[in-house]
Length: 194
Image (tube, rainbow, N blue to C red; front, top):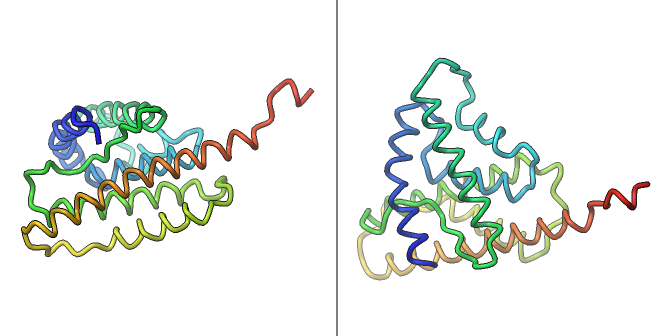
């Protein structure tokens, strides 16, 4: 993982968490970011609007705090699109900082995975068949989403958490790339349609 990208994600995590909580969003940052990345991986044309609708299912046009939160969350979408499309593989999961207890970070990772699976699920009707490797990753993400948050603070749990984060991070990149390439193969260029 790229240090600067991880530090940037950690810095905005707490602020976004406060904004989401104060504006009455249906999820926290980790789950919301996972949902966003799942929708982007699914390739929904209206992924951003779908995501905002999932975070705020009840319209509230006059709520200034919600508008501020939505504006901040739209920047998360842009950030995620840039990272997922980067050839540098510098994609970072929005999770609590390394200073948070490992149980709290593990719970957030589980919520991130649940969000990712939900996002893919919202775009399931347009998803091509996935490779066996991608299917296995999704099965693993499902298991990670049910992680036990009662972990003790020790080196083994810290190491296991770090390995899981890296596994999910790389897995998301692989799934995103596989789905992007599958969509590119099925798209017919305009010149071929004439």
